[in-house]
Image (cartoon, rainbow, N blue to C red; front, side, top):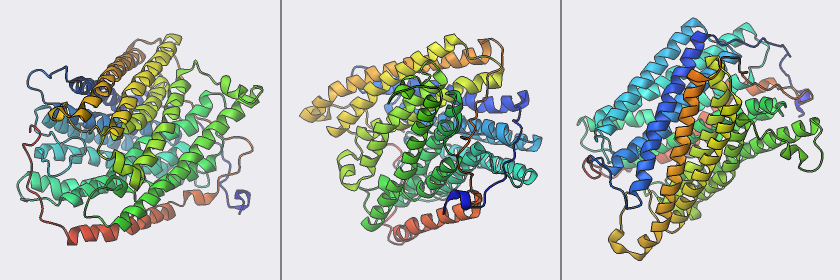
Length: 562
């Protein structure tokens, strides 16, 4: 059925909402925590790659796994979550508005998350939580580590409820209008986040906290890992979808174009909601105790995510070409040559998009049962992680920061910062290419991940890894230079840039794009299908894991320096 024949929303124009200084303070607070996390977590990453050369020893009795845990938790969980929540609040505030009561609850979310983060960070820094960011049992951390993580999750749930309330109130005021695209996307992302984080919340509250407090002698290791990866894979899409929000709805405005298709963008986000969660077993393909049939089913579901990813790639390059040709650029690639390469708001996210090509291919390899056996638990996986999250996602977040921060602070993005931002992006791309490339190659040669420097008894294979570990140190050092540049840019944009008005770029849809059908906002249907897929993929194997569980494990609380 053609979209034109379906019931569609009325075309009602709505006025753009002004972000007040009070609102800006809220949104910036989340981003302040994210930038501090970037610096501290990045510093720990630099120390790690230096240690892994075998030429550097940590001072003052600091342990390798201490800084590894801090690096993973602070960058993968704190930096990303705070930036995303702050960015999403800004998107909701700009498109549907925020009431005083909603703002108060948003502040509550911020403080709950900040208190939880502080508790978790302190336990890591004092060496009581050397359990890495996956906190796999039976490694045991101090109870405050898990309680802090639980508070961070609770804070995000408060933020989700505020976002949903913002859209609900707006829809009541304008009942026949489709939700603003960015508000729709934020709502999808927070639905996915809340459903996914229920898994880690159950693991932390039911298993880890009682176990760490001594109320339970053992823990069901397989169940805890299954609950983690029920959460852990959609966590990746919780990071990626805000980048997609910028790609779909912000970048077209920056390059002087329009959104290719509102319907296509919404459909891709609905598909991400369906297929991001019931796929965690592809992280446990070598794990005993899970029926291979259910691993196969979840691998198939994992590959379904490729569809909305390709839809996004098609939409982006269609937008680039249509915009270029409207501007009169001729030839097969004239539109490409004339993209605004000097505009850092476009350049940084575009480099992030390019990184997603090898990153996505690596993800397909990781999720393929046979190829996974080659790279599983090798540093290849670390390289893949840095290519996707630390390049695609972070470069897009940097691109967002170049317009969002001056808009919120009432300052201008100057030519000087444009140039410096271009240099920062190039430095980041070079550093990540060297470091991530070396990790991928060392992984193919069998180099393990999650491990400190070791000569492994002088084995010949370990000797072969030395050059790649040195390359990782070189790449990591370049990346830290990129972090210093980004921190400088952030401080300049907040405190020293000239005052002015920087736009909040939100693209309009192409004039002749099909109208968005009303079924796109059938929230009960989308949530129902999502839950049905999760129940299908997880019910039988989880019941099997519980009913046929081997004896639980006592805690290992001294194995890696705790």
